[in-house]
Length: 307
Image (cartoon, rainbow, N blue to C red; front, side, top):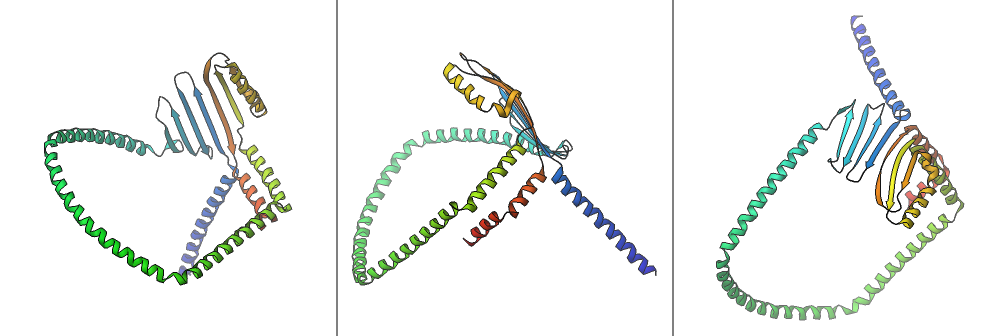
């Protein structure tokens, strides 16, 4: 009875651990599906400088990625968990690497200066080396004359062998032409199959489905909050007016959240803008499930696998 009680206790503990792991796994899946990935972006520009800041976070900023750049500061990124950056050591390493690079550049400069001094000293010796090189070139020309005579003899031998093989050449040419014609016919048949598929009703249904789902995806990903003020001017009133006309086309997208201040007689590009949005994993799971259930897409995947 004592041994059976121990075995039951072990099974109980293992079962509890498995249930805890299963619960953690289910919580992770639910968090991926229903906890959104949020993103924020801010940027500003004035007459002297510009700067930007991008942040992507998940699970109420439990995990976050931050990227910043600017004209007066170096670009940097960090991956944080609970607000604690994980790549502090990398920044220190980058500083050490930059310092080592500076030291190596200084060493290279000193070596180049020393080599220049050595070259100025070794110029008288070059004249003696040139005389010895001329003697060596005369000897090499004599050797090349002998080698050219040998090569001409070998060329005549190869020509004789080629003329002996002439009777078998027409068959090889015909075989090559047959292979080329077969490949051309195969390519032509594939082109006809692709054209028939593009002109079919199945492809038309696929096109409408992809267009509808792409529109929904863009609507889901688009920023929820946009704020900004932009000062723009090219110095030419005509070009500035064209830019304002193009911006008016996209007015339904940004609405009254972004104000544009035109300058017709001044060249300027300044302002600030901020963007916020969120993305749910459940949307993409639903999208993939819907596409894989479609018979037209399954038919296309089978056809691609067949080649």
